[in-house]
Amino acid sequence: MMIAMRFVLLLHEGCGTAHYDLFLEMPGREKLMAWHVSQWGGDDKKLAAERIGDHRKAYMKYEGEISGGRGTVKRVAEGMAKVLEMSEKEMRVRLEGGGVEVVLPLWEGEWKMGLVDKGQDGDADRG
Image (cartoon, rainbow, N blue to C red):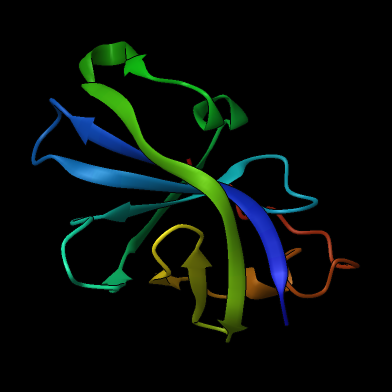
């Protein structure tokens, strides 16, 4: 399986501990799939992430203050991502530029909602 999609990684500061937000623009989905990534860069080429609620597609291009006093975001990486493997619980994705691999957990049943079987119609929006 090789699903290709756009990604953006934003540094999120000013709202608790600084972290990174990874967004994937999956084909056929109305919103961006989103994860918190606690670290980025360095020698670690395999990173883990925590699934968070889907976000508006505006975040693919947005940088700046987030409404409601939720801090600021700044783009640190963007490009294409490829899904290398997928199971019911997670998918392994390679981000272009540096060959970084990220293990992305999925919510129960989410892999059926447009990730593998595009014939299924589901609502995985959690935010």
